[in-house]
Amino acid sequence: MSGTVSGLLTIGLLLALLAVCYHPLGAWMAHVYGDTRHWRVERVLYRLVRVDPDSEQGWRTYAVSVVAFSVVSILLLFGLILVQLRLPLTQGSQGMGATTALNTAVSFVTNTNWQSYAGEVGATPIVQTVGLTVQNFVSAAVGMAVAVALIRAAARRSARDIGNFWVDLVRGSVRILLPIAAVAGVVLLVGGVVQNLSAPETVKALAGGDQVIRGGLVASQEAIKELGTNGGGYFNANSAHPFENPNAVTNLLEIFLLLLIPFALTRTYGILVGDRRQGWALLGFAGVLWAAGVAATTASEVAASGGLGGAMEGKEQRFGLWASTLFAASTTGTSTGAVNSMHESYSPLGGGTVLTTMVLGEISPGGVGSGLYGILIVAILAVFIAGLMVGRTPEFLGKTIGRREVTCAALYILVMPILVLVFTGLSLVLDGPRSTMLASGPHGLTEVMYAYASGSNNNGSAFAGLTADTPWYNLTLAACMVLGRFVPMLLVLRLAGLLVEQHPRPATAGTMPTHTPRFVGLLTGVALIVAGLTFFPALALGPIAEALS
Image (cartoon, rainbow, N blue to C red; front, side):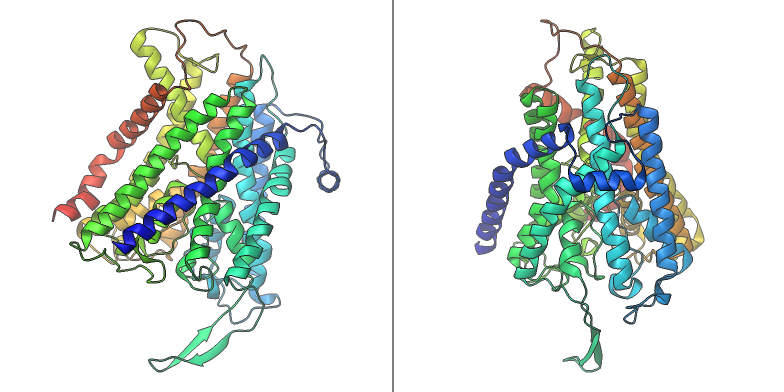
């Protein structure tokens, strides 16, 4: 009973903190992306990359900028990882092989942060800080930029341009992510998260033998790791490690950080489109899915113990069951991927629930930026379906949703399931990949499908039983991360190009309102039906079959 009370109080405090920050942060982000003035430090950055901040780009130029920036980022990070052992401050790092290095570079640039390596021994402090932490900032800013470009396109009238990618990238990093991460890093430091460059120390373990204790610049990376819905841990145990997440206070702060911007962006959306009720509707949709994920995961783990206080295998005693399942549902619903417990050890239904929150498409509330444009894609599908049902031309914010617009939305929806199901099937039928599975049967299927769902949705969490540091998994997961990130982004920007050219139609008595509880219900139904029709057979063979057995 005490665990239930403390768990409910934790959730209540989390909701209160999010509610307090929702209005001011959402309004600030709307101001940031709509401001016509440039800060001095921003102008310096624009001059360095020779960008005119007062010019705007069409969707094609914006898309080329996104892809070019990301490709260059992958190449630079890949090169840095390969030469890290020749640089100072190696501190006993073992480095990475070529395929692992490529997987890691792709992972952090795509905001996935899948880690096939042990954080504390695979990457030196220089790579962790100059390489990985920098990408934690800019990869999140890229996602926010694409989301804002789509919002601009929906709000503008008969235009051609959707903004300037370089301005959006710089402003998202400098005005939003850096200030919040700096404050959060200090709070984490005060809470006990380490921040040092001390050499590793070898001590005698209580059970005998030697144990290496490593430090690092953890607090600064931990803050943006959660805030930017990145998820890559400084240590192999991620946020279950006491140096990353020492107590209940830091645990609550980390959950708060990973939910903060995705939820607040719904208010930004409402302000920028000129109808704040639209933002409330998207908030309601994301909130319902998030609450359902938390409730289902927690109920599954409580029930798994047969009434003995909850299943605690794979969970930290200092957090308890409720704080672990709250973290698990939040991290898989936001494309963060950080973990404070081992999802491999969850009950079949508990593990199946966190897998389901990912295959919904990371929309509860999804990643920084990517969650918002994912929700808008579902909204466009919902108005299209509703228009077909009543025999009217589908409209969204006064813009007509025709063949080209719905084609972009449909292709967006198809990308992730194709990647997950195709690569999961190949990994199960090929002898090499199948030999790296810890489990067989339904649980083995869940392990593999979880990995590809995590990569394709740019989440990054894993079922720990899968040995993923092999050429097959490194390369196929890298392909999933690249395609799962940039193909949907390009489709979103193409959709933005189609919407920005239209002149909004005035609302009539027959126009379907997209700000009402009824529309939120329709939106929820469409999201669940699309995911259910796509993934139910695989889920039935995996976690559901395991639970029934």
